[in-house]
Length: 373
Ligand code: GDD
Ligand code: MN
Image (cartoon, rainbow, N blue to C red):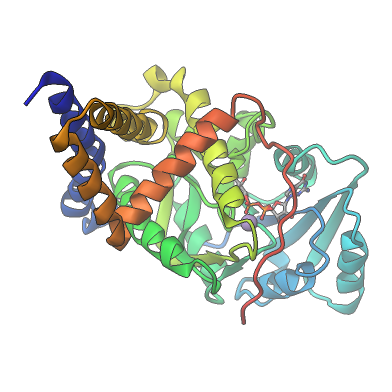
């Protein structure tokens, strides 16, 4: 076999082999280990729940209902809705909700100009008084009435800086792709958390120790993945930032333009890891390999697949039968769901890195979400 073909195969082998080994390592070595955290299940800190909104009139009231239904002492909780110049009457819906429901304290902040989610979160942070700040997207749901209490109880350990929920899929369309994506990533997120911390957080429920958040300067407004990046900064400064297995959340999946949505999310994660690159040397010893692996997976690994494929196509064009067979095998394998999901994710990451060259999507177009009961 010639050198180019061998190179293409080596690239493919590493591209698929690395994430698989990382997954198996976390699954076998860490996933089932007990938590090395002193959690007091009865710990009840004061909490500020921040809900950022942009054109969420359709969903905001049920989201507030959901939060109010949580089994958590009302006098220990406040909700802060921060709206950025919605044009669909979202602030009005919030005001209506406030007058009709009692018991929970709700603050409404109205920005007159939309500058993005992170900017809005920072505005809310200025008036937050809780020991812990929880961020939650309107298009998300917490799966049980004690989700909030479960998440907050982890903060009884002073080493915990940030906590996020475990994500399970919801919604009808594209559920297949979403589901396998989550299964694989949940093992990784939990494994990383048991080892030390995970650098990927979820907007459905991201909780941060408030004084730490203030010390970190609030949320970064120059990149999209405000939650993941802030959690990573917490972990770099020695706190733990973890996904926990006793708090489940779900997110509505867009009805239309699913790919646009996935690409934007990938863009945000890539921005986060690029911004994290320069901080790598400051990361605690246990966190460094996790960060390195995730940076590799998000920033570099997808390109091995591209390079391998380009080499194969080139070889086919100059008449290599072996290259043709390999390409055909690679294509037929797309019938396997997990393999297909993986390849599609790589396409999102590649498209996202390229798209990041001209637009960062800090302020993104509002997408209609599938409403399921
Ligand atoms: N105040 C405010 N200002 N809120 C906003 C803005 C804004 O400019 N843009 C979006 N939001 C709100 C939405 O109303 C929603 O409650 C939440 O932020 C998330 O917005 P989505 O439109 O649902 O975005 P997403 O789910 O695709 O984004 C996810 O990924 C991002 C990182 O890629 C979320 O998990 C985000 O939290 C996360 O930052
Ligand atoms: Mn969302």
